[in-house]
Structures are given as structure tokens and as C-alpha cells.
Length: 385
View (cartoon, rainbow, N blue to C red):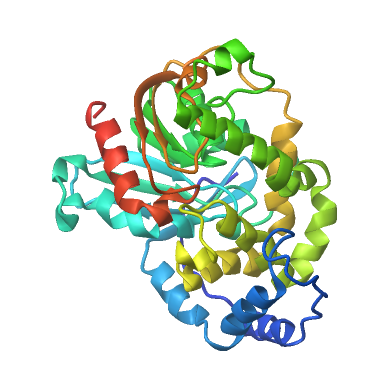
């Protein structure tokens, strides 16, 4: 296995963009019941308008160029290609920090926080809070490409991240992650004990929320905010978790539709940007710019990774390797308005040393509330440098 790190530049073939345009111009649209809005999924009228914008107004080359302004690299770890952004701070003594995205996102999520984290002095901050940033695409996502074998669960990804940081020459660093990244981050703390100085998470679930029934006596001791999180968790399981159940059980079946239809792929992703942003709005782009939503969708579409993205859910649900012993690495949790963690349950398996609750921001905190997320990351790691 080669340990070579290669400079990477996005350069999508024009033939691939032409193929996308043809598909967008020849969509076979479904019917729709009147007056149902978003209650049964993405509305037909909304998606038609978004697709027309994608086909006629969205400029991939402009966004491709903007992404290429960020230093990008690839390397091979454990037989898998790993794509990552690597932004070194102008502060030579900055703390290295791994940022790990989730689903339905990508490395595009971090565009608004890269500058403030890497170069706080240029963004009104204290240069002592600077980070050298390593931002990998999860195996199977985006330019990390489809996974090549089975077994790429959160633990294996964490071990790959530890190898990546060693390969880059970082022997002491922090980790941060949201959603799937909040599964990988604690695993990385276990995989690289002694190197990881702290773990910061947002949009955290497993290990940070209760599972199973909660006795009424215990429920009565929860705050109003915690009760609201339990209610939202129930709503998620009852009404919003279809994508998870399909991905965790039949990822190959769903891959055919999502890989063949760009509109199907877009609807699959944008539904969650509507449901998981905060405050809830009539349209996803009320919280996140429309072109940014499409750039994120493009990273899924152009790389043909719908199946391997879904496989990560399957691998995690069939890993049979979840840790039960409490972690010891200092852990900080940012709880945004749409998040689910409850401290008493998080403390059962994590060494919680920092806990912040916000009244705005949702699942996509780096996009929705970059100021709050940046400030919380800085505050948590300030004591660990």
C-alpha cells in the first residue's frame, strides 16, 4: 500500500455535466395528491422549480473553482482512497483539528468555518485559537469514492483518520464531528488515545441520547428542553427515519434509483435539509443557500456514491462492536436547537467537560450557525492546547 499523499484538484468532465443536463431536461415526473405540502415528501412544484434552477441557472464550474481554492489531497489507507481538505493556519503553533461531516452533507458543509478556525485573526478572533484543519470525505462519500470492500463502519473510519493524521505528521490533535461525524469522533478518541486531546461533537445521537423506554419517574426530572428533545426524537423515529431504515437494511436496492436519477438523488437529500434545519421554514433555502444545496448534491451525484453512502448505515448497524466502557478523552457537546443530546445520558459513556445549548441552529450547524459553532469549538479546545 502506498502512503503517498497526492495533490487533488476537482476537474469534472464536461461530458458528465452534459449528461446531467440531459437527464434534468428529460425527467419523468410523478403525480401528486392535492394539498399535501411536505407531509408526504418533497412537493412536486417545489422540486420542479429547484430542478429548473439546477438545469438553467446553477453554475457548477463557479462552485468547482471555489472548492479548488481550498487545498485538497488524496491518499490510500486500508485499501481505500481518502480525499481530504488540508488547510494549514498561518499560526505555526496552531492545534491540528480533524473535522468530519455527516449525511446528507459533505465537506461542502465546512466552507463557512474554515477561515475563522484556521485564521481567527483575519476574522476578528484571537490568533491563539487557530487550528490546522484536516477535513476528510468519509469513505464512500464524494471524492473518497465508492468503498471497495465491506466493513467500513465508524470504528474503521476512525482508525483510518488516525493513520491519516500520523501520515501528515500530526501527533497531537483535536477532533470534531457532526451527525455521522459525531459517531466517528469518539471512536477516534479511542483509536488514538494519547494523541487526541479532545472531542467536540454536534448533531450527536448514539452515546448522547437515551435508547429504549424511560420510566415516568425519570422522565419527570427532565427539563422542558430535554422533554422537547425526547419528543423530537420520537417524531424522528416515527416519521423521519425511513431513509435510515432503508439504508441500514437494503443499501444496494436504493442505490439504483439514486445513482440513475439526479432528481431522485436531489429529493432524497433536500428533504432532510427541509426537515432538519432550524428554525423550521417553508423552504430549505430559507436556512441554507440554494446553490450550496445543489453543490452538496453535485458531490453525491458526480461521484456516483449513493450506494456506498447508504452502506455506511448498514455497516454501523451490523458492526456488533459498539463500545460499552466509558471513554476518557475530554468531550465537548454543542446542542443546537434541533439537536437531541441530553447531558445525563451523554455522561454515561463520555467524559463530558463542556456542554453548550443554543436556541438556534439545527443539524447543519456549520452552515446554519457557523458563528456559534466556531465560537464553541474555540472555547472547548482553548483549555486543551
